[in-house]
Length: 460
Ligand SMILES: Cc1ncc(COP(=O)(O)O)c(C=O)c1O
Image (cartoon, rainbow, N blue to C red; front, side, top):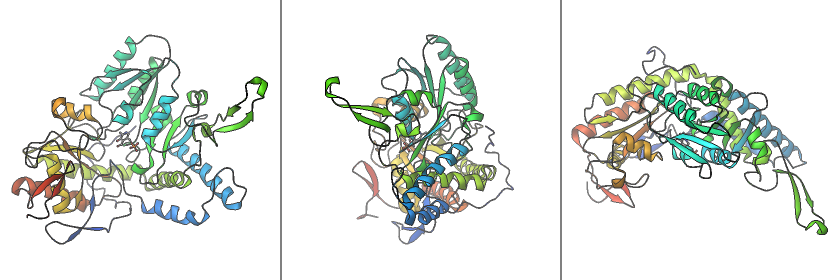
């Protein structure tokens, strides 16, 4: 994977891609309205206008997929299967790879976890998002310590794999870009290490695919998982793509219509009941009526990003990253969280804490006083955020819950994230807001309600 670092070419200034909601205004607690600055892309990105238009153009032709005899059913079936081909192309799939449509990255990784061969050993860094960390419950899992450089990550994996029992299947699960620090992981090198030791590797590309090209064949990973809603296609679909053998040999993820090729009554003398032949294609794990709009929207996003050109998208995003990082660096009270250090290549995901501020309080003030939507908490990567904060697990609140009253020092972090649809003004407003809040304090009073920090509407 070729990666451009934050020291981007400042002469590139392509426009953001049009997204829905770019003109939406929100009220400020201090009075008036402002256009909403959506800076929580890492959670869910706004829909690309192009995706919305494609879905709207198709909507009148919407029909049942696979089993309908009517014209619109056939059209929808073609659209659904062509979307599979588009995603396979987007991901640089190899001959024989399968593209399975799921609900999300979490669903994709749980599907793969359910398809692991018996006695599979799983290797996963403790720094992973919970979607990569937790699905492997029935497998023998080795949790790898947080590395402090990309090279250390490879060395740690090498060591763990060299120590493993030298027989039986093994799987490494790794994230391409961190949802906390935005840092890129050395996927190609980790894949080489996995393969050298007879293991396979699945790439959690939830945060990588919206920002960088992801090629299964170039990275030489065995599977890739990602979510539509982070890829500007928020219609409830996700993808697991890659090798077909484990998937073909596994029990269907869900049992039901669509996954079964043939179901026959078993004769009474053979005990009664039914015999089932399951599909060996991706349909094996796609039981039930598929989310054709969700799938089509992902294909549309893949085309839109490819046509926009990742070189341009990456160059522009690096400009935004540099603006935010340079702005935050001018505020001594701000500490940006990083595993691999300042020079690590990264995507537009930046987490930080502000000395003397509760993160929930800070995030609430950004929203209420500046119309900026960020996120605070542990970002469903509790072990990683706790490592980065150096905090005591016993004193932490749950994911997303503020642990103290506004004004107290925070044990959670604030995350700002952006991407292809982000105008410069949003990140500029964000940097200005951080500086003003740190210098002057909040202009409003806040209180904790249902575990969240909210403006106190009675007292200014
Ligand atoms: C790195 C990473 N992996 C997996 C997920 C889970 O994605 P989803 O909630 O779409 O299943 C997320 C979501 O934030 C993520 O950031």
